[in-house]
Image (tube, rainbow, N blue to C red; front, side):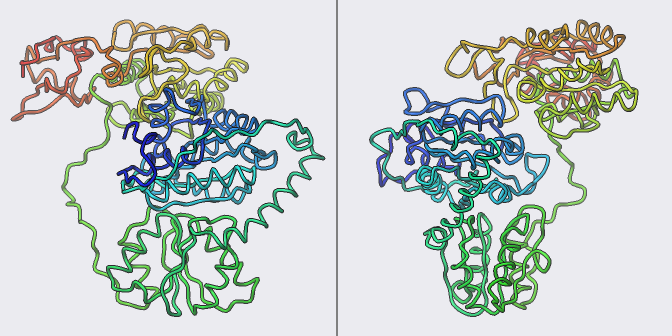
Length: 613
C-alpha cells in the first residue's frame, strides 16, 4: 500500500492490512510525531510511516530501543504534538519505566502507544497480555478487531489522548495486525495540530510531593472516563435472551463466526467491547442483570473475567459467570474450533466434531533455517569449530536465534532482547565455564551496550560475537544506528560500532565471517585470552544487500568432484541451497547466493556458472 494512504479522499474504500489501517487512522487523528522500535507483529506500522515520510506532515524515527522510543515520543507530546509510539508486546517491558510515570506527568499533545501482542508466540518468546499494562499504568485501552476498527480506533485513541492530555493504549494482536479488509477512510486534518508548551514544573516533574498529586489526578480522570466507556460506540450489545457472552478484541470475530455458523446469532445476548478500559461498568452491570448466565470470551489472561466477577459481586448481581476455569484456555491463540467447543459446552449442547486438519505423523518437518548466503551460518560454523561443545552459548533476539537448531546448536539459553552478554557474563562467573555470547548489531545498539560495560567493569570472562549484518533483518530490514544506507540513500550519521566498543573498554577484532581462514584464526586467538573480548563478524545480509542494490555479482557454487565427499559439508552447514537429487548431493544454482563459504570447506566444491546444476 503506497501513498494512497496519505492521499485517499474521505469516503474512499481501501483494502488495507490492519497495520496499514492504523497508519491511516493516525493520519486522520493528526499525528505529527512517530517513533518505534520494530517488532513483529507491529513492524508494518512504522515501516509504512517510514516509506511515506518524505514530505509528510510528521517526524518519524526508528529509535534505538522501545524505552527511547517512548521517551522521545513523550517529549514530543509534552511539546504539544500528537504522537504515536509503536512496538510489540515485549517491547513494552523495555518501555515500562517511562510508561508508568508518563500517565502521571501527562501528554498535552496526545500520545498513543501501540502494543502489538502475540498470542500463540508466533514470533515472540512469550505471549504476555498487555491489557494488564493499561490497568497498571492507568491508560485507556482500545482493542480493535477488524481493519476498519484499526483505522477508526487509532484515530479516536489519538483524539481522546489529546483531549484528556494523557497517554492511551491501542492494544492489538497478531491476527488483527495482519488481517486484511476493506477500510472506508475519513477526513485528513487540514491544519497540523499543536499545543504550545507551558512551563509547569509542579505538573511535569514527578518529585514525590508532586507525584502524589499527579496520581490522584490520574485516578479522578479514569473515574470520569467510565461514563465515556459506557457510552462508547465501540461497546455494542446485540441479541436477546437470558444467556449472554461478553468478548473483546479478535475474540469477537471468533465468537461471531461460531454463532452464525451454529445458527445462534440473535438468539443469545452478546456484548462486544472495543473500549475495554476503563471498564464500562454500568453497561456491563445492565447486561449482567439481563442474563442468567454469561460466558467471557477473551484470549490469554482472564482480565475482563476477573473485573466482571468483581463488578457482579460489588453490585450484588446474581448471575453465573463462566470463563477460563470452565471452558476456555488461558494460553495460546483462539480459533473458531476452541471457541465453538466452549460455546457448545456453555449452552449444554453436544461437542462439535473436530474441524481441524489432522497432520500426518510421518510428514517431514521443515524447521526455519538461516537463508542461503547468511553470514551468521559462517560465524556459527567457525565458533563451533573452535569451541565445539566445551563452551556454553548465550543467545539473543534476532535471525541468529536460529543458531539453536542443528547442526550448530549454538544457543543454550536466552532471556530477552539484549540479554546475551549480561546473562552469559553471569553464567561464566558462576560456573567457570567458557561462554560465547551472540548478539546482532541492532540488538547490541538496542540493549547490549550496558551488558558490555558491565562485563568490562567486572572483568567477566566472556567472548562476545557481534553478528553485524548491517541491518535489522528479522523484523523487515529496518535501519539501525550503525547502518550505512537506507531505502532513501546514505545514512548521514552512522554510529561507528568499533569506536563504540572501544569506548566501552574493549579492543574489538573485526572479521568477514565468510572468510573462514581469517575468522578461524581470530577466534582461536580470542579463545586463548581471558576477560571480556569482542569479535565483530561483519558482512551484509544478502537479502538486504540485494534490496539496496549493493549485492556483488557472484557465481553459484557447484559440485566439481565426488558428491559423496561433500556430505560432511552438507551436514555441518545445512545451507538451504544444498539438495539431494536421486540420492546424489548437488547445489541448487537458483538458491545459491554465491557466498562461496562451502567452497572453502571442501576441494570437491568450486565456483560455477548459473547454468551449472
